Length: 143
Image 1 (cartoon, rainbow, N blue to C red):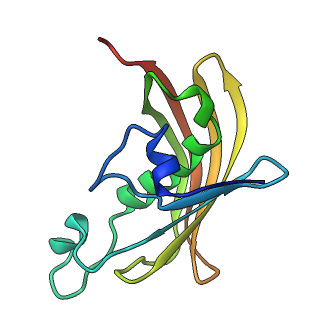
Image 2 (image 1 turned 90 degrees about the horizontal axis):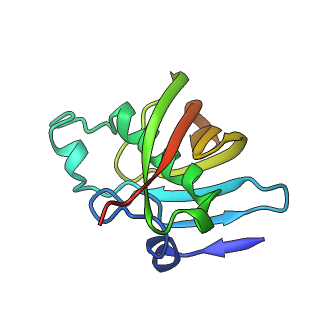
């Protein structure tokens, strides 16, 4: 099992605050990534969505899942950026709010060159909030 803290994650993931949306992660013996992110009270994406009743937008939930998927290919990311190539079969089942700890499980399904096909689910307190199939590409950083 490989455990990663936020500094480890910053070593390979090109995202930075406020868009770095996983705080710790580990890869289990079966090759699945398990990541966590606690939604803060003052997140930029909840201040206007919705005032008085903040809810994490679905696209942010997808981004949290995508960053967890990237952990699965962490050794290949340096020198690249990770870009969405597709989102399929995404379903939202429960809302995510400030104070919630998002727990993501992601799995690499297939690889074709620099395209990676994954499945992921995001849960809060054991309740499914979002799930879907994510495709991302590793694109070399132009110098």
